[in-house]
Length: 77
Image 1 (cartoon, helix red, strand yellow):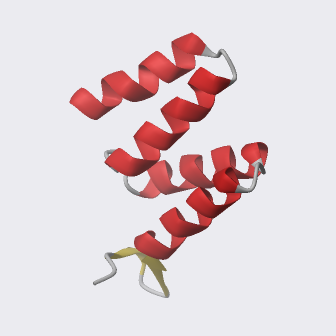
Image 2 (tube, helix red, strand yellow; image 1 turned 120 degrees about the horizontal axis):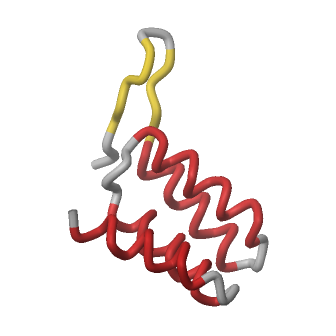
């Protein structure tokens, strides 16, 4: 079942759908868009482990090691 979060009264977010969209962007190589999608997700759900992990992996692949480490450390807290 999809997780629903309500940041405002007028808009309900489907976090699972947003995560699938971000993962799809990453899989087809649209890395900047995927990074933005994960960052938006983390703005709504700061401890969303799949988003932190995948964003960390992207940073690692781009040799942005301090950003990758930041994402992975956030997963532990």
